[in-house]
Image 1 (cartoon, one colour):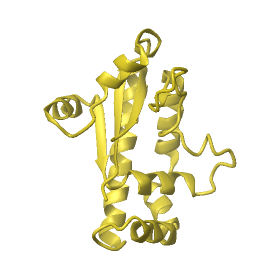
Image 2: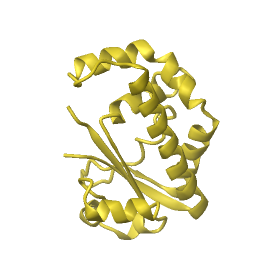
Image 3: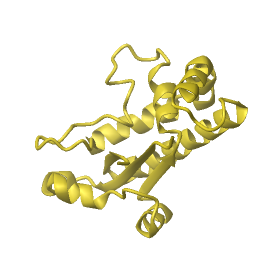
Image 4: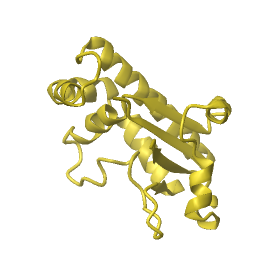
Length: 164
């Protein structure tokens, strides 16, 4: 099973001027040529197979009692028209970056080893949880941290899309 997640940086004011449909068109659905160009420019990030595991490592760590605070990179405000794509405003992007910057990402993954192993088994991934899986999740979390660092420095908003 492959669960893909995409993050797309936009100028901060774009979230106020774009309709949900326009925002949806700005975020890639697959890793295609458009995604490759956006990723090379630091404007998009996509992960394959690790999104659920990354989310568990970030949310099941017990660092924050408020569930919303524990999910800074997946959360955000859902648009009123019912779109599923959360939008993180520039101040939320900055908070997400600080959360990622201040978190020992490798330790978060190690703390959740049992939960992550169970999730990999439940989702019928082709290989069982292993050190290789853990390294991949940590690597993707570091890429996400770097992506949010660039977005926060630029004052950008971020739109999040789970691939269909």
